[in-house]
Length: 400
Image (cartoon, rainbow, N blue to C red):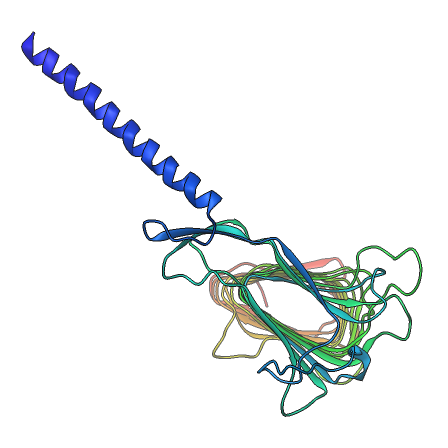
């Protein structure tokens, strides 16, 4: 009986101790919430709620006292935006009469004493070139965030004279989403946005090219380690380079006006597009490539960054296919144009060409090959895999 009483008493004291600790913790948290930016026991709470419109900018990064006149984006040659987790938007905005940079900060969270919770931004001309506008943003740092709602907005009036058609826009951030163009038309004035060139580098941000973006662009460069990339408009460019280690990529039509290649470095990404009017140089490991129509060649000739177990689906192609390092990838082509050639060298993958009007050289180690060909110039070899070649409804199994 005495042992039971001791055990019961210990449990009561333990519960009381836990309740006291919880009460003390809640007291400290409450004090911190009502005293933001004040360090208590090595921690502090930060919260912001500000919105700033900038219509002019300092003449240098040192923030001289004299500012320039209201800036006009159309007179600039370059705009550079550098931030971390801030969202970046380039949009038409009916409520401004002049070009503006809007900086919105509604971030909040908890930080350790040594973490910098200051919100610092700078909009300035480059000392070396007054036609270059720099926008630098340093976001608050914490270990728990209730909100990371910080936005950097390039606001362009609805007037047709306001434009970025002569401006190269460079955006570099870590995780904040990047939105180019409006999703909905303005009630009056011009709604689309034209940019000379767009260069985006991000770690994990989603990149969205919205439907009111003027898709005719000189150069488009997007490099992402893990975010999704989407376009709601057809892209017409002289140069287009896309690098993505992982993530989902959804594009519509792509047309290159020059003879340069469309460079795709996809890693393990899932890539889809409707029509590509360009020659394609592709690097992918274990990703997914799905395109309805290609008017140009498709090649993956990088011996260092070889294909692994990637999946390629092409409904129709008018151009050659060269995949000398296909390895265990699965290649499916519904239709190849007349006079075109396909060369695939793999190991344990699968090649399926449903309507071949050109020449084919396909070699596998243990993978399978299926051809439906209208040409008699085909060479298919496999060491231990399965071969099925149909020539105008006449099947030849495992004989080529």
